[in-house]
Structures are given as structure tokens and as C-alpha cells.
Length: 446
Image 1 (cartoon, one colour):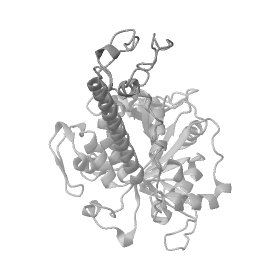
Image 2 (cartoon, helix red, strand yellow):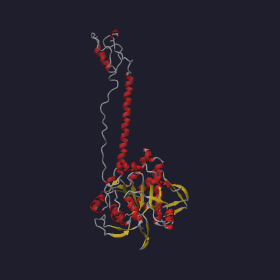
Image 3 (tube, helix red, strand yellow):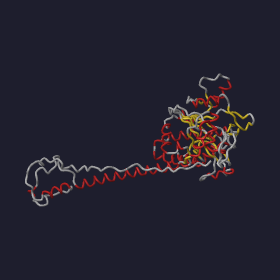
């Protein structure tokens, strides 16, 4: 389902300033001899005009040296000369020009970034139709945002990764990002593409509708885009999705390049033709193109499972978060602009997040979250009982995780090895369950 792009036209705020008071206008207001009565000297009016005009008059226009009127001098000494006042005015004018130029440049940057974002109005319309079946919005103040990585080959540079089958696209990566109400933690829960779920009847791009069916999760995006994916996630988790974002291959690459690459440590060299990736073993910094191949590769890394690929994606995203926070990108406008330009350039969002201000407010609210509180995990799953190449949810662990996210309760993640030892010993579950996962603080190189 193709999203609709809305124009984001805006009007700059008024830059008209009121009249400025000349600091020299009252230079001669206080005159000790102003109240004295004296006959008007010839040419006195012209001399007053000369004084008011800021010109130095040696002796008036019609009188000689003896025609000087007592009290003409400033009490505190002579005032600024005409040349000084000239340069003061030019300095003020120059400063005004610089301020206006900076404001104009800032407005131009804002408008450019804001116009980058594509608004997905069709998803909002589809979700409105099914509002009654959706979970009740949370009243805790927490936010749930569905992040979708589209594998579409449409768009600049994406066709080099292959061709869409009959124009179709699927969600290559799906992450439910839960941001706590106090903005002190963020939990990113990955949903396996091969997870078997019930996909509701969804509207297709050609105007027809699919039937409700049990299928692997990433088919939902192919059937009905973001709207179908959101309804599917809400159905099996019971979590209300507040917003969604869709990013394609190019957007991911540009983000990595904008922060100067991301460091990874490889235990073994990689040679994956399908992912267009060839890397030596050891510590190295990946650029955008290499990073895309790294998070997409599956057949030549580890056991070739989608599970290992998701874990690698989570570790890489954690490293990316660390890179942004440690380099002060969020606090440095000069470094932040390329990141925002890359992030918005291939971004499609719902109308609630389709402006730069809304995205900035969201980023600002979570930029102080410590890296150890940025958590990554995958929904508890196991091989599907009808096909070991597919996944199914593990209960009651999955329901416990979904409930904690719904209620904005703390979610505790532990390393996979620790969780496996806990399960092997048969220890009774603790009041606060733990889940296998990682944090952004762990990094990829220890």
C-alpha cells in the first residue's frame, strides 16, 4: 500500500522589528542653560539644526566666535563624534544582517528536513476503520512505536539489492520500541519474520482484501503494508501501537555514514555474495554499505538462522546508539544535521510523527536514557511444531513480556547464557521475570 505524501508548507514567523531608538537622539537633552532667557542670536536656529543633525559647528551659521551660547556643551564632556555614531549605526546594521541570515539559514534547514519526511495517511485511515478491535490506548504516558525495515527495491539505490517479486515488499526487520513513561528506559523487542501468527483480513494495494489466515509474520507487510502489520502485532501482543516508522535500505546506510561508521569486532572473516559483503576478521569500522550487508547476512554467518541475524541486528543497533551518544551528536547542531538529514530522507511515518518538531521532541525526551537502560530482546519463541523452519511463541513467557510492556512495568534482560542456565537448573520463576537480551552498554567489542 503506497503511502501518500503530504506537503509540509510553513510560514516563517514575523521577523519585523519595531523602530529602534537612536542612542544619540537625547545626547543634548540636558542643557544647564536651557531655561535662561536671552535674545536670539542671529543664526541660532541654524546652529541648533546643526547640533540636532550631529554636525560639528565651529561658530554657528550667522555669528562669530562670540555668539556661542552658554550651556551648549554636554555636562559630562563632549558627546560622540559624527564618525563614531556612523560606525555604531553600521555595526548595529551588520549585526542585524548576521542574525537575520542565521535565522534564515536555520529556517531553510528546518524546512528541508521537515519536507524529507513522508506521511503515511493510508495506514491511519485503515486503522480508523478497525478502531473498535484495537487495544485500549495506554494511560501511563509510555509510548509504543513500531519500527519497520522495508526490503522494498523501490527508491534511489535500492534496486541494486535485487528486484521486487511482482512489486511486493516485506518487512525485513520489525522492532516494537517501548519508551517508558518516565523516559528513563527504552526496550526494543524484535519480532521474527518467520513467527507464525494470525494475520487478520487486510486491504491490499489493488483494492481487494485478504482472508484472515495463519502465516509467517512478515507476510502481513506484503499483504497490507504498515496497517496490516500493526493490526497483527496488536492482535498477538495486546499492546496498542501509538506510532510507526518505515525506513528502507538507503535510509539505514545514510544513517551509519552520517555518524562516521560503526565499530564491530568479527571473530571470523565474512564472504557473503548474497549480502555483497567481504570483511576480514578483527576490529573494524563499517560504513553504511558494509553495515547493511552485515545486518542482512544470514547464510554465511553462524548457523544461518534468522535468530542469529536478529541478535546481530540488535547488537549493531546498540553500537549505533552508543556512537551517537558518546560523540555528542545530539548536542552539536553541526554534527546533528547530517544525522537528521539521513534519518528523515528515507523515513515514512504516521501523521502523529510526520514533522521535524515531533521527531525532535521525541528524541529530546529520551536522549538522557543511560545506555544500560536501552535494552534489546526478541519475543520468546521456539521452533514451530508443524515446521521447524518457522517459529512460534513460548508461553507463558511471551504473555508475561507483553503484559509488562502494556503496563509499563520494568523489563529486565540478562545474557542468553545466564538465561539458559536459569532454565536448566529448573529454578522457580522470580516475582520479576528476566528475559534473554542485551543492552546498548555492552557494545560489540566488549
